[in-house]
Amino acid sequence: MPKRRLLTIVAGVVAAVMVLIVLPSYLATRPSFFSRYPNLKAKYVPWSTSTHVEGGCEGCHVPPRVIPRTAYRLRMAGEFYLSFVMRNRQPDIFPVPTNEACLACHSDLRSVSPKGDLRIPHRAHVNILKMKCIQCHNFLVHEKSPEGKHTPPMRGCLKCHNGDTAKNGCTACHTNKAAPATHQAPDWLIVHPERAKSTDCNSCHKWTDDWCVDCHARRPKSHTKDWRAQHGATIKVHRSCEACHEKPFCIRCHGEFPVENLNPALSLVK
Image 1 (cartoon, helix red, strand yellow):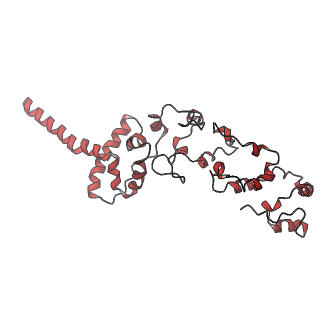
Image 2 (cartoon, helix red, strand yellow):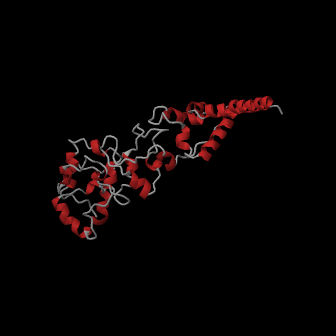
Image 3 (tube, helix red, strand yellow):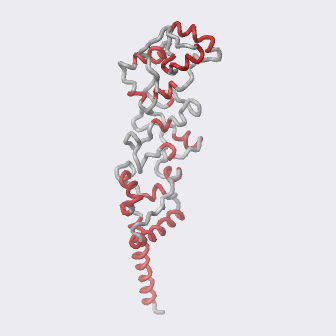
């Protein structure tokens, strides 16, 4: 076979590969390609306003290795052609991002938030506890949190920082926040309902919808094993039974509703 003819054939094959595979693969791996699919458009729109808008889908959803990324691009060449003949196709082509993909860019694993107001020991969470990045950053790109942000909401942190699995003190995570002096007073649990009338409690406690109930649902420290024998003397000093217990609760034992130190204005925390 003449050399010129061989070169022509090779050039034709290369051109065909470029036109039929490489170009479609490139077009199909552009984020805008996925906006044509109803099930992916809902995720494309939040991504377009997120901090990851400069990165493509492949960077997060495909392991940063040659074989997985080559396989992904070949598959996307097929998706390019399928998109013309199957307009209602709902492709499921994006696996959950792995730590390997996140660490390809986020290799510094910072220990504080960008503003410096939070302690975030990423190395402890990722390298020691073996947690997955998406456990905390589940609102990072494709949807916003109930607060309308892409940053992790505090309620997500408290799934682990509940006082049992991990520390739940304010200073465990916040660099410039601690319980106010009023909260550290010996009588705070007694006087806090009155203080709440003139204080914006939500400025600190709005991380959960039912933060009052979250606290009141716990058994008070005063309710020790001998509480039944001791509660009468305590009520003579300060009565707050109605904050947690409805009227029939007392009647079950007393036979009638005790009125000593009763505050009619005290209402049940629901």
